[in-house]
Length: 63
Image (cartoon, rainbow, N blue to C red):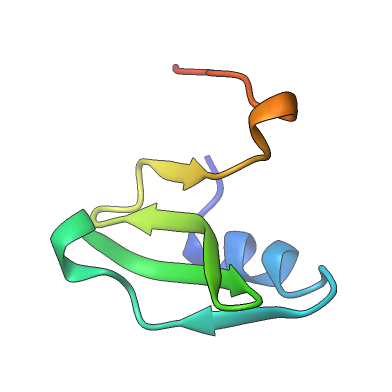
């Protein structure tokens, strides 16, 4: 399992990504945004991440 530091390192290599304040209502401990829109969130506890994709490329995966 990868941790927050690895997720952060990968996310920050993408163009125009900023780490923004996490949305407390979403129970996130980290959030990454492009053009002010969140695309990646790490949930509290670090066991779950959420990734937002364009509807056309979206796919659900759960483990």
